[in-house]
Length: 275
Length: 312
Image (tube, rainbow over all chains, first blue to last red; front, side, top):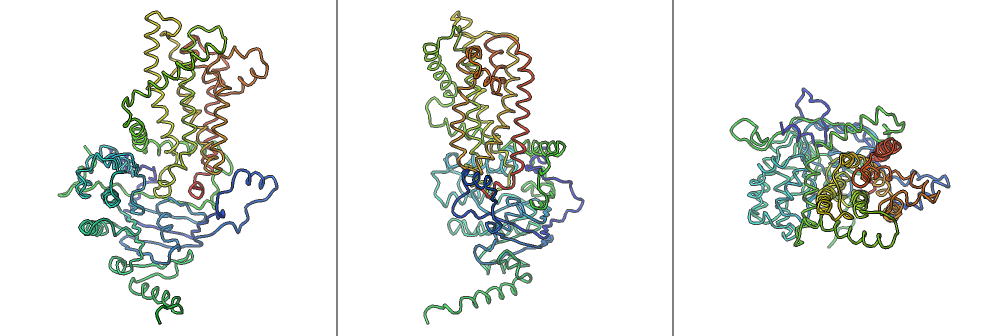
């Protein structure tokens, strides 16, 4: 009873498809940002613009993605590589629904677990325990459901002694451990990972990695954004290379990464240092 | 019973939700609310209400965490929700009963009937209008229904008000029973007007908050304009003076008629102070103002719902 109400926090159920395969589909997706220079337009500017009949010029828009087509099937472990600012994280945020597409359609089937930015929604003044309840609530779990998980979370984080301590007194490592333990205590169909492999001390990193691997094994679809190419090569069975808002390469991990590295090398060749 | 143990098999493990399906359509392809149709608006309102009811844990957590943060370090704690309006009321009733010469007995009861709803309105609108800006760190990272944030602010203010309202009323009732007539409140059937007034006020506040939140997120200047406007509204609403006090001035009377809050406050004044039923105008204007404000605010908000993320 309580489980069904929690699952659709955002009420996104549009009918329980008979088909239980997870799937993500981008059809001709464009995403446009407005560039405002260094600040948002003020009320004054907007009023003057409206009065003088001017509109925002098309060139004040920046298209991050244009005509993006991508289908991620059940069982896919997709790695996303590309330079900084290519839109890798934005891709994940579009899957989550944080950024809505400007054009085109995104279809997502499956419960999403975003391990994107850990510690989102943590309130410094509240204790670790309260923060876990709050975080659970944001993910759609009731207090009662979280109570069943909270022991496990603190055990995993190794922070049993700090349950009642406001997290503003946590060290940054402790904060990360708590955030990771909370965020990873789930059983998603679609797992989105954005560069969160190094967290805490060596012992915790080892356990975190083990949990990550079991999570990846249990998920139907995994999308990993990372600059650690070795890791992607190990974990993924498909890699895309994103650049300038387009998927420029797509296929077998080893091949795509080799081509990506070759491309990077070709660009940096002329400015090699030390010779 | 609990969801965590519902799964079958040897390892109960974390609970597995059913497969969800969702679709996001391009905002340029499908301009939302370009033509405002009532049916569409109703459908969206219903969907959002459903999402909010699923998100009630967030609201619950938000309210308790705000209350906890605000009071955990003060010695008197939650007692302040009561003490603050009590002291405020004492100051105001002393000042105004000396300063403004109305022949009003039980002036503090009248003040109480208007002041607490006003403080609720002020706190709600003030906090809700900047709620998205304050929570932008969260909004950029997690996909949640954005209405959760203003609604949480309103719920916090409402919780505050309810505490204070009930406690203060009991105190004033005590004064009434023990014979200090000029500060005492009385019980009467007309008290049923108070919950009615509360519902109207909440609906009105939600609408105003959604509209002002949208404006403030797009134009940060609004934050300052709103605080001034609220101050003006405070004086333009019969809180520390009765409507009859301005009957002499034609323009002020017109202002009274135009102020939607005045009609909603009429319910509080009638229920707690006058012990009579509101005039027919109030019965018509107040619900229309509340629902109208909600529809206006909601449609403004809805039209820009997916643009907020690009403006934070």
